[in-house]
Image (cartoon, rainbow, N blue to C red):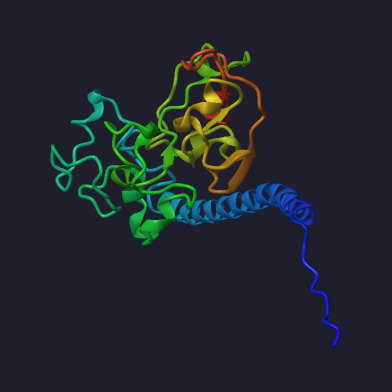
Length: 263
């Protein structure tokens, strides 16, 4: 009786198969990462659309004026604003990793002022963020959960921070909280709320600094004063008036947050 010879892969054949799998994985992983980022960016855009609807209703109820929100956010305000932005529900000494939802009293920040119009606390957080992340990845700063939102209220647009010369570079910054929409020269170009951080690391050392990494790889979502939402792509141009070492990042807020508010 003749025995059948069993065939098996040789070591070289196995190595070839492993190499092929590694090449395919190297090709597909960036594709999957890009698709995941795109999905998060779309979810973030949806959040801002709902917030835009709430802003529209607020403006209608309050004589066509923007909400009187207290600074850019709870974790961003300077010591001079602590008293003005004080809240009974957030006593001094509240741990900076405490999650503070939009039902604080009295309402001071944008998520609290718009809460009656959109009762969904989760839309204030971009899917690319998590509440436990500290602002600028600094454990001495508050978390985004403590801030109550991962989006930034464009409290004080300042055209003097723009790298490129512009017609308004000699104008003073303005406060948009409580501003009449009719007083905004171009509401469709005037940002009110956007992703944080609004940075695009262009070169080292910025590309290695975690706290500068944007919510989305190629741009950020922005809610404008006319309540429409748009995804803005980064240009890749370095901003020269930021305080990062070597001027190694694009600062979208410095370059664009003032647009539409001046004439």
